[in-house]
Image (cartoon, rainbow, N blue to C red; front, side):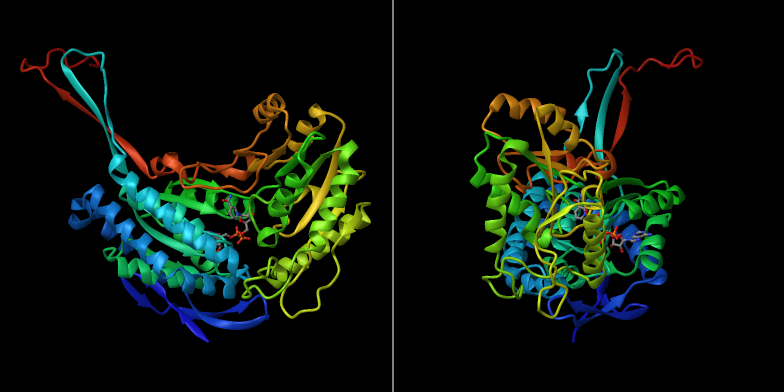
Length: 488
Ligand code: NAD
């Protein structure tokens, strides 16, 4: 068994206990993981707080912090193959995706490296003749960054990158499911030369590790990615320390196909939207809203594409579709699909057992056009299940698209430019993809409306979330201050 340790205050350390991590493709344990509980959390937060207040960190210029991130990016590229293999073994995500994603993670660090010395304050044209007034932009402080199990290297990069660029220090909590890639990544933080305590990486369970972290009085900001129920806990926890929060939560994103769309391109994008990463993506386009008149033709196309998907070992380069990450996830999805069928949804394809060890569940399509309230339509499944609804006109497409508490992403397929703009304007969500899906970039802000959370990751906006401002007033007059009883 491989062993993964916690990284606290520049040292690799054992935890309060150990637990094992399973390979989802074999259902066998493959790694031993050190578990952080209250004591380890306290040590990590105190280290981050000490590092934040240290003269050496304060004295490090923004440009020097940028160089630290550049060194980290180079190391990520150098070790990308190893990290990708670890992520594939721990999460079951296919190797072609983990390799591509990790190589791109380096670009996120480079983007924030470049931003580090460009987060300027401002001078104000103040309405008082004897004052100079300026705004300094300062780091928000000690950040608790909490990520879910999917894409931990990517989801932590969009927190570590901007936080370090801004001058914060962090405690990154890897999810208890599949924490190995992020714990292995700590070796690169060490090798890049991050000062001790600046970026601590731990893992553990919600109650024993997440709660002491998010209630800790020395934590100033909580950057959370995960599900809405956990987010509610975190908001309640932050009532203890009054930390600011940013929340990246789930979605039930609509994928809208108008009758004039390029159906071949739309079908490929729909497959990418719901079946890549076996559907375990926060932006999964899990609700297909298709114009009534092309429904049959479009579903036929999708069936053809689903039949061609190569299901297999995630470690093989030709595999396109691997297992789910956990057995619980598989059982939940099977149960929701069974209930949706009882509620009247029609099975188009999928939902049959796959004869392999591990947590496999096949690409599945449900026609819910007569059962728009079926559970598969309303609940985020975080799996490869597409629910199909139909619309008669543009107004109905928009009503269905917005008919969810979530608001993370949407796809629109149409060749009609004016319609693309009209519909985009009316959708309540943080990302709209027109004639494409699942495109991301370090330059582009990402985040949700409604129950999909608040705050943005990616882009310049994200870095500003890790800063706060200090307004400085300088009186330029040499005359004594006159009336002390009026506000100046
Ligand atoms: P989860 O909410 O169960 O867990 C996320 C993290 O929160 C884990 O590290 C977990 O240990 C921690 N946690 C649990 N209880 C806690 C507590 N009381 N205090 C502090 N931390 C606690 O999420 P999951 O099931 O692992 O991941 C799936 C969810 O994440 C889905 O809803 C998915 O849509 C969402 N997600 C969102 C994005 C995005 O960017 N918007 C990206 C990926 C995943």
